[in-house]
Image (cartoon, rainbow over all chains, first blue to last red; front, side, top):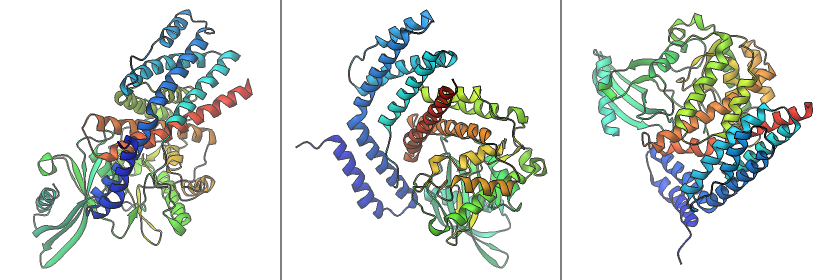
Length: 148
Length: 350
């Protein structure tokens, strides 16, 4: 069989920490090996979930923009929101998902500033929705602790 | 590389101590960690008249690509000026800015022997039964730093940028936002929202303009097996400012133990009590809240800069990636939680 990438990375970490690290004399390089092991484990996690996180993020951002476009009083902003919501990824490569994610996040920042400056009930509720999106996005990307 | 460092260190010590004879290096090893500096533990020996001397020294030099732009000169003067003022600060010996010796600026200070440094990233309770004792000292020392009147320590005061008390928060926030904008190639909606909140809700001026260590946390001090703090390290971010900046950084949840203790030492209320007693200052909860969020933002600036240095191949030490990934993840989640809480308060008031 062809071992999955995340499995290879996780096992690589185990080899580094349990077999190679104890054989290293320099405490500086021991530290470096330990850190590389942790980074391999994080890379394994990212390999498995990275695309899903970005696709979900981008879909939720588009939905937010379309919902806001219906309510914001600033016509130019509403147009920009609909334009941003129409941006599509050319592929599912991570770099392309990130490129679109960056474009959408730039638009998110403008919308967030606009909503914060409004004092309507809708704006307060919508700000909460935007913060909830950010919290969900970060939760999806959360990394396990180190040395626990 | 290590052998090269040994020879260069010996040559430098000979230059600094022309009367010494048979100057040599018994051992040299690089200390792990420290993303903006390279730190070497050097065991040096020489003959002084009839006396053979052996001494542990620390050589701390700028890294080729540091996280943040800091001046080795300022850090040297912090060690040099604060040593002997009742704070556990190692004795700084020589500052060298001439690149002929180690290619980049560095300074030499005494090695504190028989001590260890806690992990900056692990929440494991490594202080064990000494946790409360170490916490008492840790927050007392911070309080005693606040008791110093900066003008009374001219060596350090004179090399720090002056600031008007009412401008302290803005100067710090402007600086770190600029670092974020410089080093982040991607939009940062969480950080930007946090910065907007800080600008819209400024804190009062500091109760007292103090020396602020700038990176006062578990992981930046040395302690012995008896639980005695023997050295406060890493003064490279020292500046004049609000003492709450250090207290908020020292108690940041990033350094929390698995049992919820701040810095893996004591609970937050206890830390504040010790600090108030030692500093003679009173904690303003609203201002403290501001400085806590500020420190999450400042942390993000440092972690983003570390990632940028690595990505640009200016510093390929793998330690640079851990803050960018792990600490950045933690701090961003703390920022969003802070903003959710404020949004809830706003909703309750509406």
